[in-house]
Image (tube, rainbow, N blue to C red; front, side, top):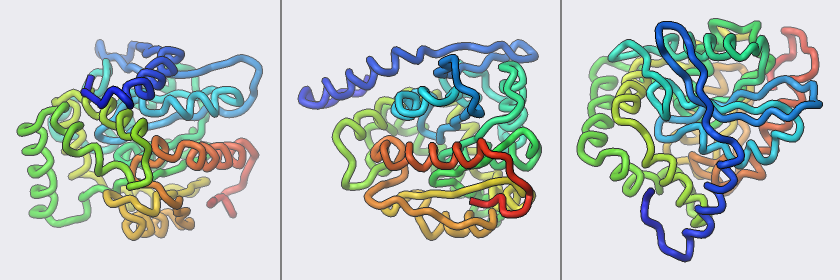
Length: 301
């Protein structure tokens, strides 16, 4: 675990203790593959399941505050993406978004989830968009938080440069070095020390091979193109102080999805960690709207 000042250690320990309420689980998939995830599933509610997809430097554990807040009203699941946690990596060395979307579909099928609300953060938004384009009838709603657009529509030179820069950083620093030197970029100046420690904790646990594959995914993806093919309920939100997927960049994603952009004050890229009340409210509101039957017209949030 990343070293933190002792004054903050208790805060991080409290988050880890909360995480223990949602232990990692494993689901076997085809071809001797496995998928690790965390969930809360309390009986007695009829709401649609909520499925949470993390970003490139994170994992299922990062959503613990949303488990706490939303688990009382619906089943909430967060996966460790292929190549993260104990999840088997995808087969391709340079994968594309449908590779991950196919694993997501197989996992949901294995859990018996026929329809859900899907939330994707950053790189998770790319996977969520690909899933929505391929399996729209399985979604009641698609919520993208600080979505990464990918570089699939850029020139080959730009794609290669973005990919190689991130891979070089991984090779130079390793997961712990990434966490120590890069995690601060995920947050705004308003973030608490506990939020900073939690982002570092999650980032330090990425697996190099899985992170490298995700870097290729980012270079290959074109989220806007996938969203243009999805006609269901969709919403996009970003922190006002996000310097990674900026409000300007997210506005383009929202336009591609034919929806408005919601901007969250005093929040950076990992807004759901540093401003959990605001983001949980956004997720909850979107889920409640998605629980209701909708027609294709007027489906945008």
